[in-house]
Length: 347
Ligand SMILES: *Cc1c(COP(=O)(O)O)cnc(C)c1O
Image (cartoon, rainbow, N blue to C red; front, side, top):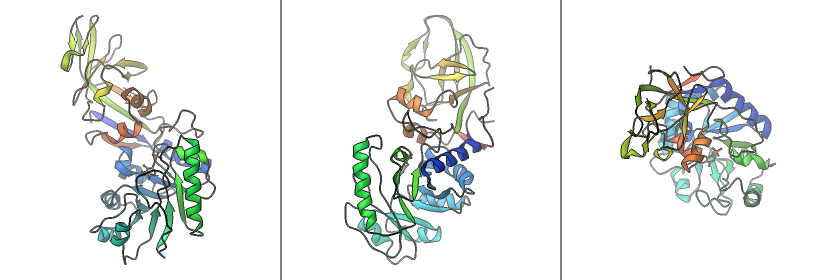
């Protein structure tokens, strides 16, 4: 029995695929980089594998692509992070499609009998050719990336730049620029959307027009409970001192599992329907919570993220973005796919 587990609802993940597909009218390139934002790339990919609304998966690097192939994933895999010399054999052997965004990437794929996609930098200032329209018979797709998808006028400029670049290519099987937040622009000339966050059940903005569902439940077990008298300091550096006699629970989940230390004394976890405040500093493997007034017992589960609290909620408190919290979930957290919703209730 694991002490911390992440349950992924297959039903809700697939529901999000359908919702994103029907909202955009375009099949998905599911972004599963960074271990599918911490959910577990092989697990997520195997759920998406049989869906025809998902045309391809996207990873950051060749190693991530190899991991998916070794897990038996057959779908097309795009490598967003380009390709370096020395990686060409793996591309062919594992059927990976590189996104070429630099002349050196082009040199690395010289003579290889594989499809490639080309990335243009229309204002992100990261990967992509700034101009020119690279021609190569192996080009099956072109893409760009929005730097500030919630900034409408800037995004529309980027999209317009991209449209002009795309024009030079005629018809291509893959043209994509919209990420989760980018869907808002309903771009007319693209063939696919390239989404991660929304697929995993986190809305990129509060007014997101797609009613996506929560996909996961992250929980950990209570490994100790004791009543501390008033005036008793809790955890390293004594940053919290009990005001009154308090039932303090120790949850088997710390910053090494992915709960950022900056949430110390700020966030709450949930015991059944009750928020239980984090007391004192989050430690490497454990976090203390206030269980006063609950019937919690050692061995019970505490919910960290789920129906009642999202990664986006926690990220706001931590002064970061959900992407960072999610991708920091450690390998100590046991991941599994459960069939249906709701994700398992606590207790
Ligand atoms: C991570 C990433 C995405 C997915 O973005 P979301 O906001 O998670 O939908 C799309 N495109 C590129 C190039 C990325 O790096």
